[in-house]
Image (cartoon, rainbow, N blue to C red; front, side, top):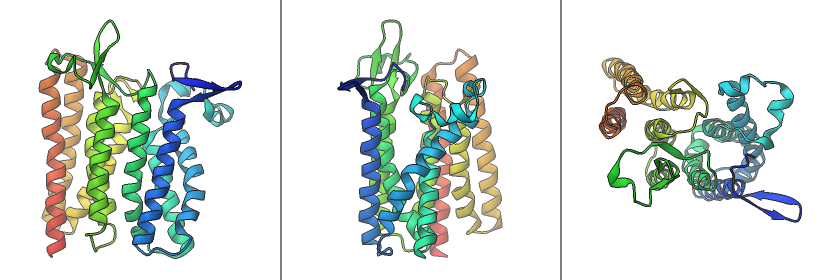
Length: 310
C-alpha cells in the first residue's frame, strides 16, 4: 500500500485502515446478499458458494483491469508486477465485474436463474461501494476533488484545505450516493417481479452518477489526459440498460436511446474539455454535467415503466 495510507502497527505488521474498510465492505456485501438470497428463495448454499467465489474474483478482476488500463503501470508491466497486489492499484469497476462474474457462476453451479441471483446481488454491491468509499478517507491520494473554487463549500464538512488549495471530499459524496442507491434498489428488490429489473436499474443509476464523481476526482487513476477509463466503463454500464429498456418499447425508442447515449458521451467529452482547458467556472460546468446525466436516467426510467405496462 502507499505510504500516504493511514495505518497502525500490530507487532511488526502494519495494518492499513483502507484495507479494514474494504474488509467491512466485503462483509456487508456477503451479509446483504445472504439476506436477499434467503428472501428471494435462492438455492440453499448459494450465498456460501458466492462468498467463496466473489472474494478472489473481485480481487483478481480489480487488479487486472487496473494493470491493463492504467497508463502509469504500463512502464513497469510484467506478470510479476501485476501479481504484487499488496502494492496497491485497483479498479472499482473491475471489482464489480468480478463480483458479478461470481454471481453468474453461482447461478450456473446452483442451477438458479442468473438474473434472479444478480438482482439479489445488486443492492449488496452498493453496500460494498459505501464502505469502500468511506475507506478512501484514510488515504491522501484517493477521494479528493479537483481544486475547489466554490467558496460556499470551502468551510463545510465536505471540503478540506491542504494549505494551498481547497478540495471536496469526493469520497463522502460517492458514499452518500451508494447509500441512497442501496436503499432504492433494496426496496425495489421486493417490488420488481420481472427478473433483471433491479440489476438493470442499478446499472443505469450507478453508471450515470459515477461518471459525475469520476469527473470530479483529482487523482490520475486510470486516466489518459483528461479522460478517465473508468468513466468510459461506467458509460458502458448505463448505456446497456438504457438501450435495453428502450428496445422493449419499440424500434423508435431504441434509436432514440442510441442517439441519447451518443449525445451524453459527446456532451461529457465537451464538458471535460471545458473543465481541463477553459476558464469557465466549475460550478456552471458541473451543473451542466448534472443536467446532462439526468437525461439518460429520466429516459431510462421512463422506458422501463413503459415496458412494464406493455
